[in-house]
Amino acid sequence: MNKDKIIKDLKERNDKLADQRRQFEARLYHEQYLSKEKDKEIEKINKEKDDIFNKAIEINNKLRNDKNNQIDIMKKYFQMIIDLGYDYDGFNNVKDLKGLIDALCKYASLGKECNTTETIYVNGNKKYNILGEELKEGKNE
Image (cartoon, rainbow, N blue to C red; front, top):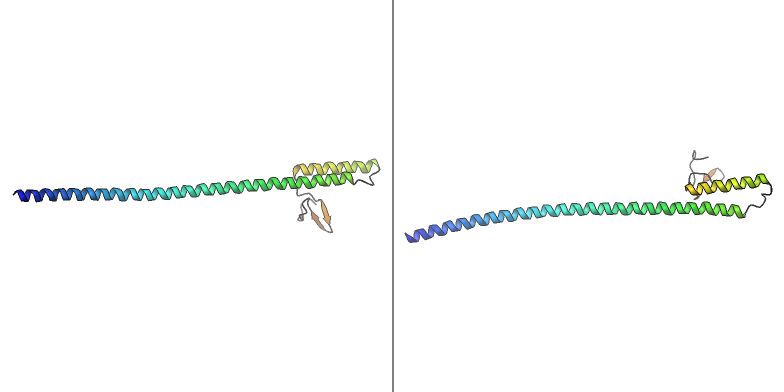
């Protein structure tokens, strides 16, 4: 009898250990599953961060390019003003000098506005802005 009781106790312990092992494995599997889900969430968050960072860089580059473009436009208008100021030969009467002053003021204003829609140069029937870009018909003729 003692032997049967020992065998019974061993079976009960074995069953109890098997249950504990199954519970442990289930908990471990669940934790691994949660860990994988967390990894996926972290990966998704990191991708979103990268996308935001890349978008910020893109916006920054666009702003920098816009600012550089504005500076180029202003430089071209100011160079035009300087060229007109140095090369005003033939403007001997008051009317012509008033026209020169009006042109200088107009170009200073256009430069301040960084205007690229005003016709500055004409070559045949083509019109160009301060950057030398051809203007389409209907734009500030």
